[in-house]
Image (cartoon, rainbow, N blue to C red):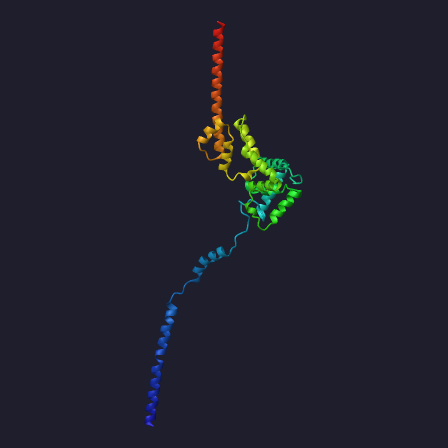
Length: 279
């Protein structure tokens, strides 16, 4: 009996020794959680929220301000275009229907539209759009075919390109070839530089596609000048059309001054001879 009591006491003591560390382990485990500072979510959210809004907000789809031919407009841009169209119509623009295939009719219409564009200060981005509103009949059908062609890049059609497309379509091959020859063979002759430049511009306006760039335009004009003017202009080695025309005008003006001085001198000499003969 005594031995049994000793065994019970030993088991009780052993069980206390094994349970004693448990509270310490719990304390050690709990204290770090209580004392460890948790990151404040209230500080992180205000920083993240604007970033998420900025990324999630889709950009408003509007036509480019520099677009030459608007295909889809809305809001303020729609209002602007409608106001521009109404203002332009009040100027009484002519309509081209393309029924009579005459390049001079087309030429007059293009010049008429160009004049209205300049007089009413129409920007480049609106010119093609306004011009197509004044096509009718066969000409408008031709424009629709071009517009609906999947290979047509409407944004690339500037007012200059639009004019070239019309001229290429309505001018027959024989007419275009003749006008190109007339342009390249044009000579100043007895005309003034201003008169020669006016005729040159008229022909070029009908066949702008035959001149690839401004330098080629300058060379063609230069070759048609009178030999006495051509020598001085060519020696200047000018690269632009405007420079060539300006230089030719200066040379012509200088030559005119020399001619006037020469004529005045000849008149004075004749008067002196007449006076000597009379005496």
